[in-house]
Length: 132
Image (tube, rainbow, N blue to C red; front, top):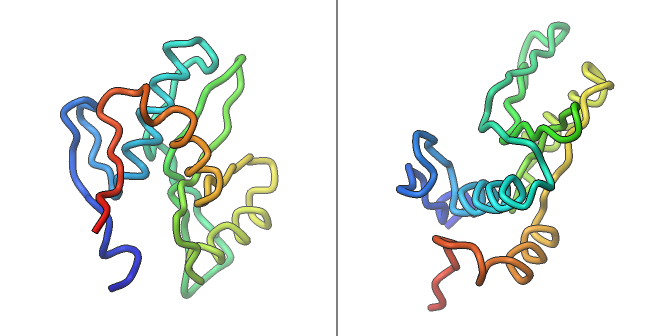
């Protein structure tokens, strides 16, 4: 079973209109809602912008970051990645090359687990991985 086969895709009652591709993305959205509530960030959006790599004719030609986070009059993007496959690595490399002024922060397993450890028990609807 690949890591993507373990994801729980779909809408969440507590998160409204968005269709998330994984429990990690849904939980990160909950974490962002918590940050809005505590006024650490202003707001966030899920997958609002697509970036194109115009010079690329084959392979990875675009990138859709998971979240756009607004803070203090500016913004940055967040990519939630529990598994960094070759295609994902290529997208991030091409973002740096073709859109060097766009900030993309990657939340990998280490960062996600830290957020979950610190906030998971206090954020409503947090989806914990079921132990086998």
